[in-house]
Length: 182
Image (cartoon, rainbow, N blue to C red; front, side, top):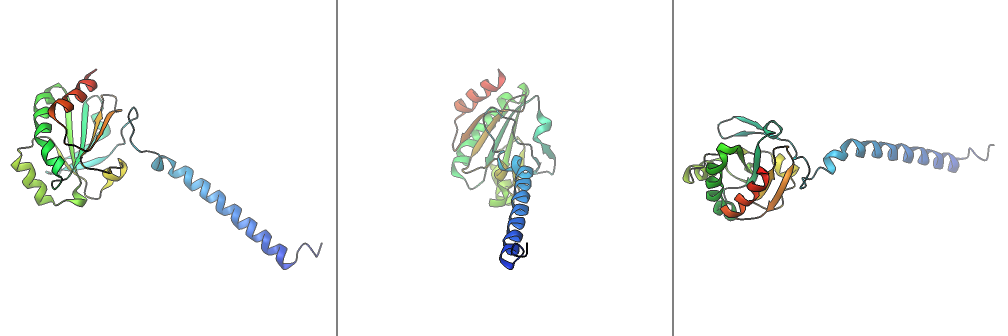
């Protein structure tokens, strides 16, 4: 029995015990964070919720817009494709807002400048909500890799279509809205 409790065996036993504790801790931590790790937005799944303020400070929460058709367009004022597609977004918004369309233009403010955003909105006479993603939360949550990135969300809150890049034409945007209306 004394041979079992020598220094090498005690060290090995302690190492096994610590390794077991670490493995259990890692498993528990990964299970707690599993939703965050695997919650990339996908077509056919509920759009990840977010809360952002617009340029005037009004708060918008995506999940509170259930029952409406929603377009979430992630953009920046310096992004050329974003600049080219915004007039089409404005035309579509004017055409469909009375039919329940909500257009949320989420500005990548953490990579942009608020004064440039204000100038861009004013120059283009944009009337839909411009939300400020100051910390990059929505961009990270939606795993935005390119600007613009647009998410078409149906009345049940599910993502109907994802369009990465742009600029999108009025015709393309309108075809995606017609899918949302079904």
